[in-house]
Image 1 (tube, rainbow, N blue to C red):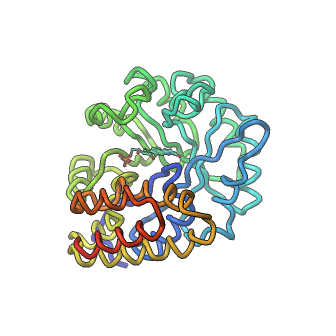
Image 2: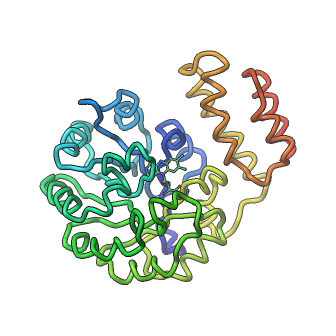
Length: 315
Ligand SMILES: Cc1cc2nc3c(=O)[nH]c(=O)nc-3n(C[C@H](O)[C@H](O)[C@H](O)COP(=O)(O)O)c2cc1C
């Protein structure tokens, strides 16, 4: 096995983007990813949304290294999510303690849980009771104070976790302020579990910089950067960037496969364009601005396909 690369590269969960079709196709066309995390599964109004169930059903997933993510504030909310995952034969789950969407935070979900050590202790205690599962956590430094993690660290260290992914910002900051590398370094030192860094990785150089700054990291988790450059995982493994032409050909292949998978399910111009256009808000940010604008302005499937064809031909 080629072991020049030391860190693992994980694909971050992004609601609306890194769903089963994107993951399956990314894995098939690009690869280079050690684990794909699903957007969070939630239990709401007495049920799990059927769309979210479909996203984790084995029959819809070809990715081998898939980690379903759950969001819950209490053991009671966790239970139905774990029941679904057990039924689907999973043995891994990631708990979301980083989401900063107001609707979730209000329910003490995601980053809304971080100011409540007692609730986190109860949740992790319940998680430890699912003996067939290994759990990980994805979190921020805190909700509104960058010292919140300090109160949590004894609880995290006492729990049997596979790893902790840290996005070193506060919940109230969303994605605005720069990531806090000093606080991250302190967290890394204090955490007894393997740690994964997440946040603002956009290039191979960014991955290498993080690896150099924090050599004890287990890996990095990449969200928007992987939507922008789906080759980041293979670039890290190869130790060099793909040429524009190589990247364009792979993006073309990935886009074609996504269309084949999605087109039969998306009826009409509106559904199709609403699903596909947001990917172009991120994909290939160095593409000619006029070409990108033409994709984002397309009003029919035909105009969209022709704009994508033009844009990629000129990339
Ligand atoms: C549109 C969107 C959806 C997201 N959905 C999730 C999610 O379901 N679960 C989660 O843990 N984080 C979610 N996140 C946060 C990302 O996983 C990641 O932590 C964040 O984007 C920072 O990493 P990045 O700079 O590499 O994108 C989401 C972020 C965005 C922008």
